[in-house]
Image (cartoon, rainbow, N blue to C red):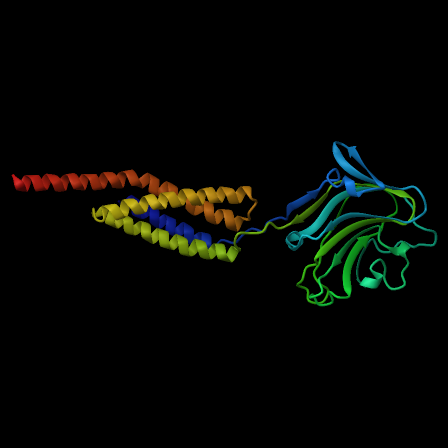
Amino acid sequence: MKRLIQLNLLLLLISSATAQETQPQQPPKILHIFDWKDLSAQFTNCQIVSMDGIPVLKIENSNDKPLRVGLLTITNSKLIQRANSFEWEMKYENIRLPDGFSLPPMMMYFSSTENSIFGMGNTKLTNYPNVCLFEKFPPQAAGGDTFTNYHGEFFEHTENWRKYYFAPHRAPYDNQTRSDELKLEIFLPSSGTVYLRPIKLMGVVSSWWSPPEAGLIGGIGGSVIGCFGALLGILASKGKARNFVLTTMKIFIALGILLTIAGFIAVVSNQPYAVWYALLLPGVILTLVFSLTLPSIQRRYDELEIRRMTSVDAMGS
């Protein structure tokens, strides 16, 4: 019975330590991959070609007239709230800018009124970034009635595959509200060809609970179960409350199995460390501790019952 008490005290210490652990920073995960094959119906002036077994969107402007192509439009608020960045690989060939146009800084970030969403004030359309992310904010956001953020990159000539990314921002004034629409576009002011591999939307997976909540669950739950287990060990060592002890241990075994299953589901669902660790650790410990000690405690009660019956028979004779 000392073994059960020691194991449950160990459970108490481990669970309390779990509550104090810090969650390692989780890298952004892929929320969605926008495959051009699935989006081919929306591109009328583009081609879907295969390069190295990967579907690639080919955008070609064969004349000197400006060409704008909308790549993606996202209005799913839950997806936008979780989004950290768009990432993709792109290359371009023979991108030519209009005569008299000087190339601005490679990365630009603006806030513009709805009436001049495609430029700054009197800026001509030819100064519009070659690749651009628009963020339209809801009316309730500070500045949301009149402002839309956009940021983009300019490029020219020819360059091989390179990684690009854009990170969505928050409302320009309140710094809290996310946009309710994200739109990614390509703009070719003159002739040239652009190739884009599938775009990845990176972000955080919605968590079942936060790291502080995981610490609270681990601290309280571990303390309660550890103390409860020690109580069961004391009762079993004295041969008291047989039905209560055995039934409670079976309940803890079932709870441990359920927690372990939930922990594996959390891992498969890409839940963060604070979620799956807080489920798997107590689940495995509960299952192992009480499964290993249940047979010995049953034998202990059986032995005490046999002794009691033997003693009664001896006194009766």
